[in-house]
Image 1 (spheres, rainbow, N blue to C red):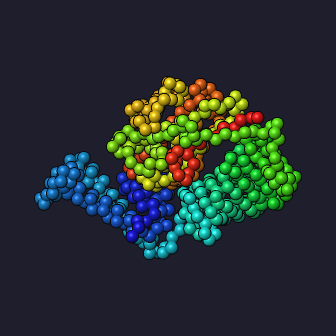
Image 2 (cartoon, rainbow, N blue to C red):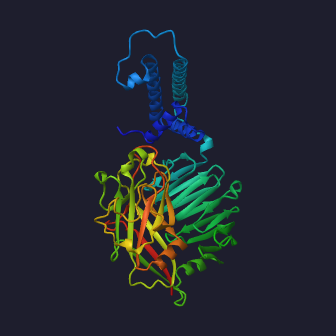
Length: 487
């Protein structure tokens, strides 16, 4: 029999509850897990009983005796107790009572509530999907007609529908990367959605990479491409657009459309004009040229390093990275990338981006790792670009230092960061912007070395090791540097 979903997280929360160190947010999460799963409710009762039994044993034999493997003494306890012993005894009796009370109370809940639902204050929408829909990952339940709250979801195929309690309806079409922040605010990273609003959901907003879309009572469609370009079509009503970069504000009315990019907002009077614009041949005088360079191009290379080489294992076509618990720092990992830009004229470079494709390593549990942030550093000393992927180790990797979340600041500079949400094992993650453009333009030998350094430490043992497709991966794209040049 397979273990129930979220078992490790549930056990950790129970432990915090019984040790009186649980936060209000964690308590709410524990309550939701408890009420939504009968196997987890049974697990709680067993954990509570175990805790009570251990507490009782500790009073009789003493914790140190148990830890030392000494059998409990059969002699009766002395009537003279020290203040500290009495205090410890009171505490264990209190926790025994708490555990027993909780076990009884929660057992009654199981009887009185045969089909429990998560607390309403934590959920505000219902999810449903079409037949054949396939999810890549999700931080909320995806079963049909399930109540959900805030979370991020990646849909590979099919259509997923979210009906909010305020009357808003949002349908996303796979492939799509979508996040719900609260009952009135979502974000579409890539993919398509159609939103239909009601009078009670006016003001509902959807973020795109370059703008905020605010509904004013309408039905509209949004398409965000893999390159970050957004297209808006208003079927009826009105949508207000606020551009992140320029602050420009534009209102799009029924049967009008807009194209949103980093440069600004282009408004179209009808859908045909917008579609025609999307397929229009670019002006040769202003056309931009895109160059894609990977770690498998020319002299490019990639490798990952681990502090303890005896623990080096896993798929040989993935680059692995992790910041382990301090007691297990032998499992710390970092990633090194090198891109060959020789023989390229980059004088008219306008934009640059780095894209990594995540893939499961099969090592560790995603439920035991929070949102994980990774910083990307550039090696600034060209003499150190002569590293070889087959010989790279923790000891000889350029700019590496002892700390698992640091790099030598005297010969590197940060150029960006990205975050992998909790539970995510797949997807593409990118950085872009002026620091990367300046790095590429200023690199004298045209060999660019980038270092991926984890910034989020594992707090619970056995957490996931994140992985990205390497240059030798047969099906997934390797680390890719996209360069946009003005003609």
